[in-house]
Image (cartoon, rainbow, N blue to C red; front, side, top):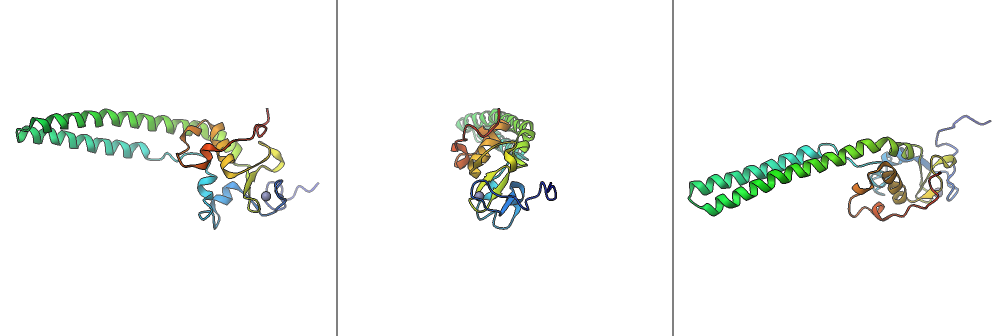
Length: 183
Ligand SMILES: [Zn+2]
């Protein structure tokens, strides 16, 4: 019974290449060189939604105010086209803002609701520097050796917010092997 060191990265071996330079994904994201290899983003457990809604709201209201300003300018200078355009701008921005803020809210709710599910798959995962892949010691809670992109797709999909993967993120198009998750 060699239980000493269980749960630590010491003594762990990568099932993909047999390499021993492995770290938890959490550590791999913070370590030196993580930025160079993009590991911070590639091993990201979920979308960062802090403050989004407020900023969109402020921007939308600023544009709305601009439209209202045009209305007044048009009235003042007897230019009805300005007033008309300004009113249209204000209306579109006003209602557009509410739609954007509502969708921000929905995405944020999804992110918060899914995070515990993401955490369950993400926390035990380890990153191997030898073959730049991700695995779970002992094959739980998921099996196999994945690329960071497949891993991120797996975590985000199971958490229910894979639709929030940004365009250009390679994880968006990653294919998850069928037998990764147990029944
Ligand atoms: Zn490896």
